[in-house]
Image 1 (cartoon, rainbow, N blue to C red):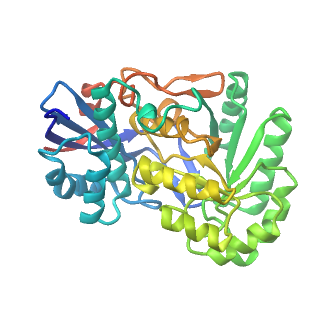
Image 2 (tube, rainbow, N blue to C red):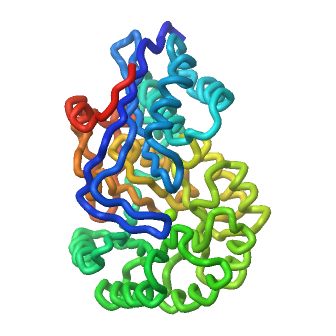
Length: 374
Ligand code: MG
C-alpha cells in the first residue's frame, strides 16, 4: 500500500428541519432534529464523508456522538491509513463504548475513502452487490393520519407497495381504526406492516396483537420494551404473524441472544444501532444462520447514511424484506447531496459511483451546522 494518510477529521453537529411530523411508540419528532456530519481528509485528493443519525430516545444524542468522534476517535484516525477500516474500527471500539452512530459515521467515511481510492463502490468492497435496487417501505407516522393516508395513495401511484404503520402511541381502538382505513383505502396488493416501537404493555400485548392480526400485516415490529425479552419470546410463540426485533437487537451479541431466546422471527438491522456496516453484517449473518430474515431499518437519516445503508443492503442477501430508505427524500427538509438518493418505481436505487457514490454539497452542510469541530 502506498502512503495514504488521514490529515483531518472535521465534525459538524447539524439541525435538520423536518418536512413532516412523526409520531412513534417511543416518542415524537416535531420541527427539527439534530444529526452529525463527519469529513475525513487525506494527503491525497480524496476525502470521505459520514453521518451519524442519533435519536435520544432510541440510540443516543448528537452532542455525545460529535464529542465522541472529536475527542476520542479523531486522535486514533489522524495520521492513520484510512484503508485499514477493520483495524481502525477495532481500536475505536476498544477506546470508546456506545456511540454507535458516531462509529457508523466514521466507518462509512473510511469505506468512502477506500472505495474512492480503488475506484469501486462500497458494495464492491463488501463482496459486490446482489441487488441494484431495494424495495422501499414507507412509514405511516404522521400524527395527522388523514394527511398520511393521502400521501400513501400518491406513493402507491408512484409504485410504492410497502407501508409500515406506526402504532402504540395512542389507543388500541385508534390503531385498529387506522389499520382498517389503510386496508380499505389502499390496494389489496399492498404489503402492510406494523411497528409498535415498544408501545405495548407486556401484560396485555398478546390480546392486542390478536386483533391486529385480522388485518394481515406481513410482520409486527417490536411490540414491547427492548429489555422485555421474555415477553417478546412469549409473543413470538403465541402470535402467527412474524414478530420483528428492532430496539431489542443493537449488536451481534444481542443477535445471538435473540436466537437463543427465540424472541423474534425477523430482525431490523440499522447501521446506527450496530455501529457500522461490518457489525450490521455480522447481525445479518447470525440471523441468516438461524433462519431469521432481516429488514433494512433507518433512523432519521440524511443521504449519506442512506447511501451507506444501500451499499450494505445491496451486498447482504439476508436483508431481504426491503428498507426504509426515504427520509432524505421526504422527511428531512434540507438535501446535503448534490446527487440525491433516487427512488425509481417504489425502489431505492443503490448508488453506483466510487465509494458511497454520492457527492456532498458542503455549503448545504454549513447552512444547517450548529457546531463545528476540527
Ligand atoms: Mg422499528
